[in-house]
Image: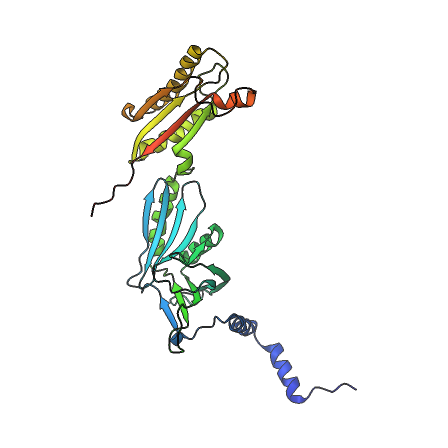
Length: 321
């Protein structure tokens, strides 16, 4: 015969049913962190975060990339980086090597000045060894931007490296301050609007294809050249523009030499008409020499009927010691 629940047990069960959902969630979260070994006692944690009067977000703008960064005193810096034609990424940079490789928890704390905003838990992320212990892909990086914009404080929590005694801090907390974020974010958005739509590698080397015996530019070629013109006119590090014309071997060497010249000149003329300085352009034509594919089939000949455009930028000059 089953035992009837005692009065004290009944009271406990009823209390559990009446317990508010918020408290039940708090109990669950505490249990979650205990299981993972990530619960932090403030006395046992190294906390890195810019103070309110130190918090700055610096924006670096270029047509090939947009950066927004915050210095984290004693730890390093946090970076949001958007390269041209690529996805947004976020990373923490530090030469302190204080985070143990493995898994860190990511959470977002509610701002102290607005108790109506609740915090968020994002779960676990990877921690790597080296100078960039935390690196996040676009989806999570965008979420961090949103957290900062509404005033929350994203925080990374991980076990510390080199624990030799119980007296030493057991964990590392790295936080991002939302103070002064919005004003810098406006500048960051302006940079994004001016960002080139393609990568530097795509801009640096490109190729236009031509129909047999043709030297005129089609719509796709004109559209790409317009993109190159925009970059050439805005990039103050550009040194030279190399234009090289080629053909397949369908005709005589003399004919092909002239055709490759006309193809290269068609590209050059477009650049000059759009205001590119003639001093930047180096024009060359090679006829049927230097094929990149076999001329024994139509597909190969199509690849050989081309003009290549190479943009050469200045190499960085470092101060001599």
